[in-house]
Amino acid sequence: MAYPTLPLVSDPQTAPEHPSRLDVVPPPDEGAPRGPTISPSRAGDFMTCPLLYRFRVIDRLPEPPSPAAARGTLVHAVLERLFDRPAAERTPQFARSLAGPEWDRLVAESPELAALFTGEPDREAWTAEVTAMIDRYFTMEDPRRIEPAERELYVETTLETGLRLRGYVDRLDVASGGAVRIVDYKTGTAPRAEFEARALFQMKFYALVLWRIRGAVPRLLQLMYLGNGEVLRYQPDEADLRATERKILALWRAIERAQESGDWRPRPSRVCDWCAHKPICPAFGGTPPPLPEARPAGAGRARRAADDAGPTRLPAGGADPARPAADDAGSPRRATEAGDPSRPADAAGPARLAADGGPARPAAADAGPG
Ligand code: SF4
Image 1: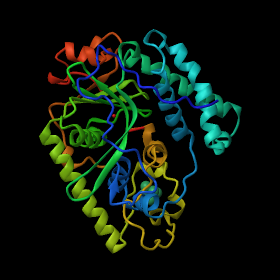
Image 2 (image 1 turned 60 degrees about the vertical axis):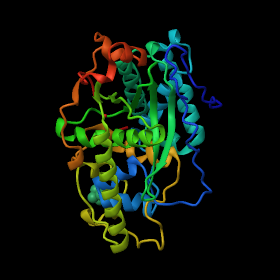
Image 3 (image 1 turned 120 degrees about the horizontal axis):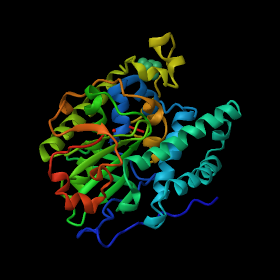
């Protein structure tokens, strides 16, 4: 099946006064000179385990597809395509019907996915998980009331230091007054409270990039955990995003120090259970390959598959055990709760946000990586 081109779903009722599409952001250019670059996924890798970052960014070791990663990719694809249809047609039945063709497309692009399952029972169980996540999405919000301004949006900015920040935003909603909501789907379960800050780091990273591009702080960050139906919402402010920038720069200095010293030490955690590099990890008796020469730190490819859709979704099956970051430590503006279809606020699209006073009021609802 041919992959449909990405039409923008734009609702005149909610169209922002400024351009909804971030045309100022150039598309990734594989041929352009690469400066120091970091994405939230790779930043998360370094925070989780410096050696994991090395294996992925410096060594660029291949990682075999996993059912969890494939599930995340498929669910994201279904939720992206769902908004191609007119609002009234965005039903659970239609969303489920997308899974087959989208899976066929993914297998056509990556034939190794076809060998992912050990047998038909294995495949059926996986398919049931995908279906359950799609159905759960509809208990968390009503897509008939939402007209995303953007889906799978590539964003990029360069800080004064020359460090380039980039990533892909799952969905961007823009209210009639221009307030922006960044939405990210996670196919795992919501993290425990002590790890929420880590989950929000990725969203603050995106918010920082959008703030730099548009000059306005996004009003709401929304992480939707399709594994258990919880939503994490957070209202960032300028101080948050300045702190996030400081954190990213400090992280980058740490990466540069590791690059200079060659000290990419392992940091064992629950993530090791999903790590494709465990057999060569010294924490488990393995021996890493020699470091490649003259690989610029952070010079990853500007591809969604490399930055966000692949290995990063591996640990999405549960709460991230990585350490919460000091800069992101708890805030009274965050709150979590189970998704509840009976609560109109959870189902509200951008227009509802504006009508409610939206993100300007304390984030009384919701729930986080995928
Ligand atoms: S197995 Fe664990 S400690 Fe080793 S590289 Fe992977 S995540 Fe890091």
